[in-house]
Amino acid sequence: MIPDQIVERLRCPECGRPVKDVGGDQGVQCIAGHGYPLRNGYLDCSAGSVPRGSTDRTFASFGFEWNNFDQVRVEDEGFAEVYFRDVDLTSLDGQCGLDAGCGKGRYTRFLAEHLGALAALDGSSAVEVASRNLAEFSTVLVVKSDLRTAPFAPESFDFIASLGVLHHLDDPRAGFNRLLTYLAPGGRILLYLYSRPSTLGLRAVALRMAAGLRAVTVRLPHRVLKVASAPIAALLFCGVVTPGAYGDRRGINALSRLPMNAYRGKPLRSLVLDTFDRLSAPVEHRYVWDDLGPWFEEAGLVVDAARDETGWFILAHRS
Ligand SMILES: C[S@@+](CC[C@H](N)C(=O)[O-])C[C@H]1O[C@@H](n2cnc3c(N)ncnc32)[C@H](O)[C@@H]1O
Ligand SMILES: [Zn+2]
Figure 1 (cartoon, rainbow, N blue to C red):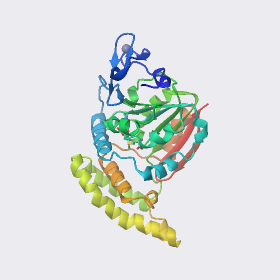
Figure 2: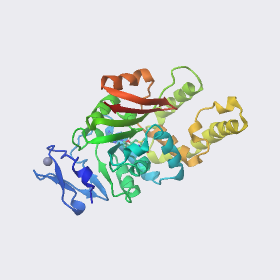
Figure 3: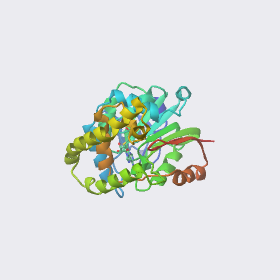
Figure 4: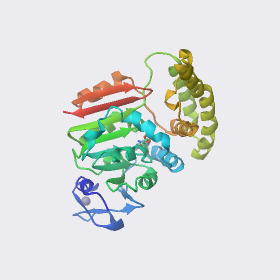
């Protein structure tokens, strides 16, 4: 069953007309007869979309990632609290949302508990995993589509989250502007985007080293990189995360200031996943606020919160 609130907002990818739920696995159909089936619980709107630039490689990389790191873990709740810290969750009650680039659905689950209805969209085979992880939520529809050609009417959503997605596009700002077309007047958008330090320091050096490593790792077979991610993550965990956590406990500032503090108190497996993520995604962009401010200003959005905690968490609304 597709939630009514989502069917109303769906548009035929081919002709742009409204669609109807035709029942069962047949999915939806427009008046011109273009049909989009439900496959393993997700609506497949990916047929016919022409891959551009790095898109194929990006979807292959994330499809592998989420099909191999497919479990929603207890620590995801802790990460979700950081992602959604600036959002008044009670205000989402009854609203309709879009999670653009939902991956395995770990944060979609968190949102689903607060929103009235939610479309969880991803362009990769991660939708296979997301539809399993979101099966218990009757208010959620998982949709397979590129966010730049998403099958929704303009101004459909009160709340759009796109967490860790746009920085993987060839043209992130164009993707952002595309997402805004789906945002209702007064609606809010929550983004997570990679940041880069504006001064030279430990983090800048570490990022430069990671960029050097990525030049090789993005070309490795995903299976090989998955195996390599475990020892790399273990080294970082022992050499950086654990000393940082020790510094926090003992009040030793020099250690507390070490990077990767998000992993303190989290299991090693969360760093193994993120190591694979960072080393496999073919494209990544990083930003300082001077890069991002104009995105919001020129789109006429009001920024409600913007914090850089080794990545930009930005909440903005359309006035
Ligand atoms: C780093 S993952 C983040 C997943 C999820 N938001 C999370 O934080 O767990 C980025 C996701 O965005 C998806 N993605 C990247 N480019 C996309 C595009 N153009 N259209 C739809 N999804 C896209 C990828 O397939 C991947 O699942
Ligand atoms: Zn149609």
